[in-house]
Length: 247
Image (cartoon, rainbow, N blue to C red):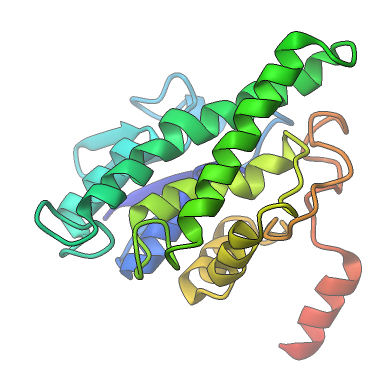
């Protein structure tokens, strides 16, 4: 059986969501940060000495890297779902956004995150350049979503599954960027939050985390508060109580 190793509050949520959207059988193994970096439980896995997550084991196959894992799971278990093929109407758009997620969006988010951590003087050229590039990328996504419900058309694809982490959970680490200027992205994330498979994935992989689907940025980052032992990413006590009362 396919085993998915998921590091809490990380981009490996993508693979849990993918499996839930496909409705395939898999075993989920959740690992906890210590308190920021990969724990020994990930590094000790055969074939994963770098402690990468996501990381999958499927018979004699071991694999890391989100995009590679998506390709593998779609090829073996997808049955034509979530990934248009050459000749399909939205194939080119799908291909573009699928690679945009990790080639452009996520690197820009992390670049600004590291610059924020460096606490450079106001107006530093590197800060302004990084911010402008990130805002341009967000505008580009927003403009694309003005024409389509999902990035590649009317149906969710793995391009969305790869992209959503950068717009949501990544912001708990930084950058502390607001999405208020991007109404189409805000609508898009609301649609994501209503998907049953996304809800299941979040509850299975990160039951204590409040999915960051709102426009507002967190008040502080996980880095600034010393790691996952902080509460900036957690569901509020009120929300937890309300959920318990409704169950």
